[in-house]
Length: 198
Image (spheres, rainbow, N blue to C red):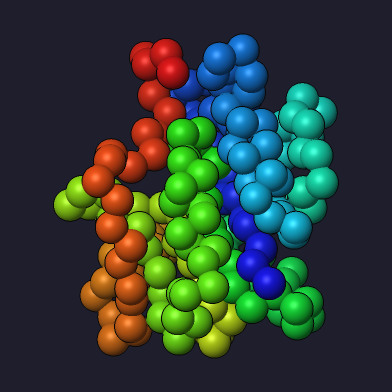
């Protein structure tokens, strides 16, 4: 069984309000990707962090679990760990497919390809949009322990996390972990830009 995880814990200092609540086609940005993931997965989870109480009040999470990442300032790797800990005891879940909370235009074709029975569970699976790798990313259970180890041992109150700018794709591409690329001949999901109207 596959589960979908939406990483949406970061702050939006340049916007002045939570980016997750920015409206795209008259709906909050985060709600659009939640609806997409809910329609494709039996189990789904949203990881929140910054201003989570405000976001929880304004978003319809449908059937998704809500996880709060208390260490969201550490960066995306802390949200990944939060979801991994949640799914560790759910043995029926073999793979997690990670989505970004600010990419509303993920095509069903991509999700279907990632969930295909032909996927080899001994590899990380990353979509390639023309010549660029991007989300969502499928991570089989056997690789979860490697990500759980990416953490600060003893972070000081004002110490900047070495994983603040962690890039999940770069991590897998530069490691010895086997990855499989699924090629698509269209552009990848567009990141939300406050100056662009989807």
